[in-house]
Length: 418
Image (cartoon, rainbow, N blue to C red; front, side):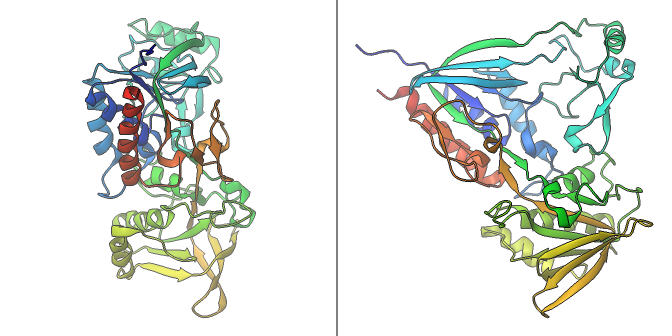
């Protein structure tokens, strides 16, 4: 007897990899369920100021894909959702998911009334804690879905009452409960993404100890128009404009005590961010301390262009220590200069650590039989499952989109295979 297989693909992860896999599959004519653990789609790309290869704002790519999702009834989306259990086989998977409460229903028009009425604040995780939002907040300016969220970890009953009273559309529902949902799907694409390496573990580099030592992702938020400083690159300690910025490569990467591998995009990110500094402060100096520069393929031209810029310096040598002048907040970077064989000490008013990519699966294990390498990247999945983007390896947006398109084809093959 031939069992009819389920003609639905489940995509876990709503970043650029997951969105690409979802729209490519749905536009061929198959049903897709797209789930995301955060309150909005977009993933890490949405936190960037600009991304490769075109160096355009993330909204350029996301807006097109959000429009494709909106116009395609074959795509069903669940945000604030976790996968709890997976069983079955290719063509016939059973998946248990939990949808966590947003406390705001679909009546929301993002009118801001609840935010204005709310008096409680919370750290803004979208901006890596560099500013705060109200406890009733829009996840980001370009959120999809465009709906508010209430953070009940910070919001008091009194504050919730103010939000309910302020909302004209009956969108606030503080009695929402988690929902358990069972799904039947034929193929699964794991696009679970990545997290920045915890730079606080790099004791000698001062992150978490000195306010003017930040990570590369924090730098993206500082430079972004919708970031904590409205796009102006300012020192976190005192709001001062920068004139001398140090970029520290391989901050944790290629280090057997932290991340043994190269995270692929860190050199490119620092070169890109030095151009942010150049655009805002034409007289500012950017110094990039590196082990060796890795700019694969056509990205080499960006490196060559930066090398020709007199305001961007490259020093081959590993940074050993960073110290702060407590009175001024200025920093001293101690490094080895391989070209001279000497230890050097250079001043900087802002230091940016090129922290590496850590797959989300290093902390959250997929609830089914998949295999990981020693770093947490997925190396084997059962038939009918596919790992894409930074769930499988460190990758840039361009190669992630290519891989996700290929995974869409593989998932469709799982649906039709007999």
